[in-house]
Length: 296
Ligand code: NAP
Image (cartoon, rainbow, N blue to C red; front, side, top):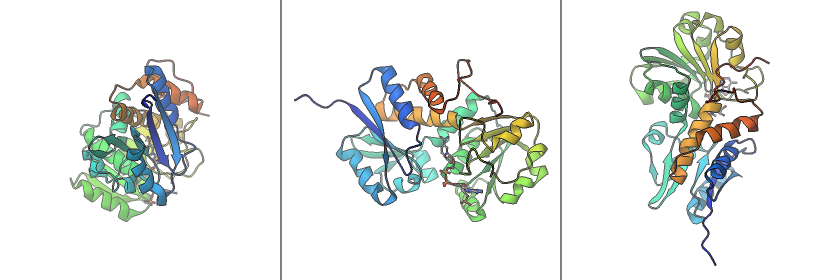
């Protein structure tokens, strides 16, 4: 009997049916003519340790880990990459000969996307709303891009404070949700990022002084949808630029594909697969950037 050569990757989450990761990874395997498959698994919290052990037992290339498992996964791997250690969260477990390596490609994915969008934050201020795993990744990304000051706003103030202290550079100020109505604070920002899990399509993002922002202020939403999200809509209506998190999803996935398979990821193929799955037309330019999605 011949050796099994098919590379098998996975994503663990709960819920998982909505995940676009399989579409993106399987399109990459097909484009590269690699014998590989990437499968979604609904894994409940109590079964996460068993699922993580199965990566080695079954010889998977690795597994992405999504909500609600990113923090727990960091405790279940053998070694951690620098960003996973800093964030205390893992979104990518790589099956290496010496053991399971936990990495976090979310911050790098966002950093790539913000660079692609042409944003320079050197010496500028940014505001991040949300202090969960996504908020932590966003904070790291904007600091890497050279932000001088970051306002970290969260519904649970203590969580923002704890996260700001982890970075301990004096550049990050934790604030309560009502800071979003502070017109002076909003006027200072070059970039406002939504890293909350507030529903992407319905209204529900907390009241914010959009109109006080500078004309060149950029709005970025970690969530994504077929149409502009509830967070992006008011900014776009004012003529501000904005983007949703499909680009971040793409780049964190491309980085994970490279970690799992040790080959360069076909990023354009993966982007097309994502846009198609969401029913969003590509812009027609080489990058597929939707810097300003059409208003509904
Ligand atoms: P999480 O760890 O559960 O954190 C959720 C955050 O949202 C917390 O800061 C929470 O505040 C806040 N929040 C929830 N409901 C709220 C409300 N009604 N009003 C105000 N704040 C509220 O989730 P996460 O992993 O950070 O993910 C956050 C979002 O980012 C999700 O939509 C996720 O899909 C997205 N994401 C996207 C990518 C990508 O590749 N595009 C990557 C990572 C995450 P409290 O602390 O007060 O509870």
